[in-house]
Image (cartoon, rainbow, N blue to C red; front, side, top):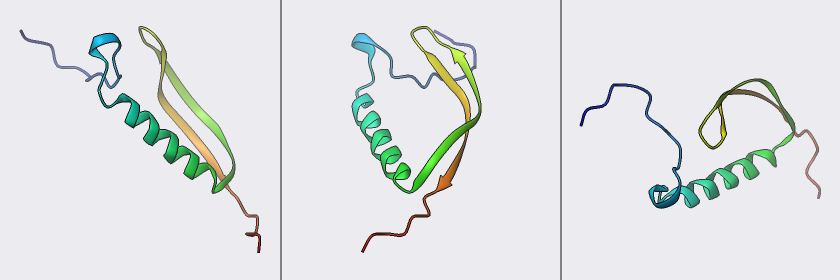
Length: 75
């Protein structure tokens, strides 16, 4: 079987073909975002582009601006 060269899908799949690492990847994403957002007082998406997929909509580009949290640590 041959397949034309193209973009490799980066989704997790569904059903019996679902990626075995899906849950750990989602957990890692949640931990990283939680950690990052504790150091920033606010953020805003300044530009984005989405593409429709079979079961969902996928962000193909998302430019984000973060504002550092300038509060002094409590003593």
